[in-house]
Length: 198
Image (cartoon, rainbow, N blue to C red; front, side):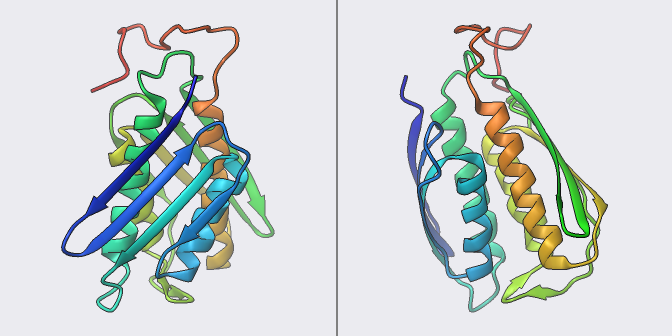
């Protein structure tokens, strides 16, 4: 079974091209106009073991919001496309990970329904050229694009770089678990409703 997708999104504000292989080894090529965002998406590939190519450009001379949001939305849609009808997947994934003083819990359900919870309080600040509030924007966009439930809770942390980075790493681990094929399930759809689409 091939679980790959290619997707592009072009607006007057951004241009996004994505290729993803859910059963990869973490190979990646990430190009965005925001170096910290590129570094974070790199975490997704490395720790989720997804083969991922991302080419994003946008109106960052205004700010990074449009590029970050559209990248999240398009990445979510690419994952949804690669999953197909979701037969045989584990569906749920969760991870609680530390990074020095920071610790974050991420849990998700590839339910076909969008719901996003962000309990990661951070002051408005910059990490490099990246506004801290854009982490929430990225993940909310992913939840919308993938049509999934996605929850984040900050358990501890002070360093903003650490907090955001461990959010991405925990997300990568939770997403890897959720998309994994369950050998005990065969091609059964993990839903009593008989569908995982809205």
